Length: 181
Image (tube, rainbow, N blue to C red; front, side, top):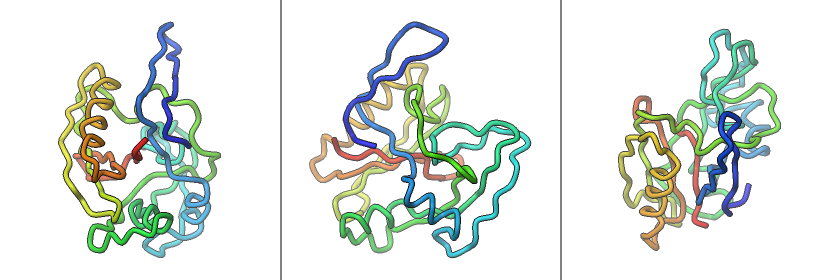
């Protein structure tokens, strides 16, 4: 997925939103690895999600009831660092994320994923070595796209910021990544 602007259309209205930044799902190579063994070394154990609503990091949408998913340990900064030769040291975190047992990755998103009104998100900033260089709390308002764009614009105004992780405040879980355009 690239970091250029993308366009999404809602099905309930005839408006088109242009997102300034791209929310990045877990990539297909990482998904293939996680479906064998997660970043904590545990085997992937898929299950049927009877209730639905689990935030899937493979396709950036909530799960539907009856889908086969797995809860795995994921280290997003570690995987980014392996591609960029960064050395995040103690900032390398791993945590639980839901993924499909099988999935081809993200489809067309309707705005930023998991950014529903009232949600509390942390927007954590990292430099090119993978060290935290700031962050902020985002209480998602009704206009989630504008608020997320503003938070990312603020983050990338700092020339040290190479990427941003968006996390759920309630659980601290990684939701998605945004890289410098």
